Length: 247
Image 1: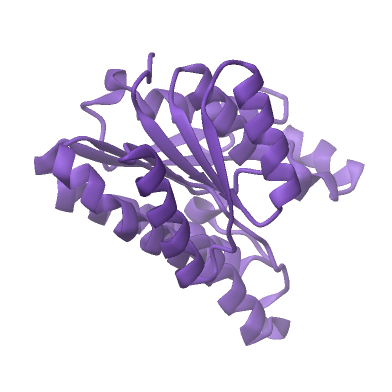
Image 2 (image 1 turned 180 degrees about the vertical axis):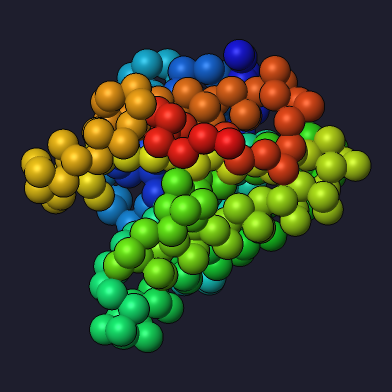
């Protein structure tokens, strides 16, 4: 699955799933424009890519800020000349039961997880339309499919990403641009590392494959959807959840 000659932009690229996506896409030959808030962590990822012989440019961006997204995308387009692949991965949680959830926590999660994907896609779509080739990949979640108590904001944002994916897929399919979502289940990342061991053990009981997923499990799916091998797949939600949710 070669991506030689392609340029990929990944948000939330400094750690976890985003970092794994950057490394997998770069390994396949894509030049990387990587975005996140932590400049120090971004530099580490970029350095790892360049040491392996790849090309990477990093941008410190808070995706909740529309102007920061616009500035970063403009700089990436100026440097690379195009963006072929967009991975909307940036995401946060602000968990609380509905009765106690503050509006600020709702807004923060929706802005970071969903609105940023709309803004990023809007900023890069012109480049894809011009060249009549593109891959838009949104990182959703199993909880956008089945919901989760204490996460009405997070579940709503991820369900919204799935709807966004399908709507975009219909809009741009005639220009040879695909839009797909990847819905991870329980993945071993910094976001899940704070959970208790009891919670982790109970989670594994509902995963038929009997293990927690890795960021590479998700990144492999992203690399496939970004490739020419997935050229006839669009508007699809690819579950990477060990069988936690089927159908």
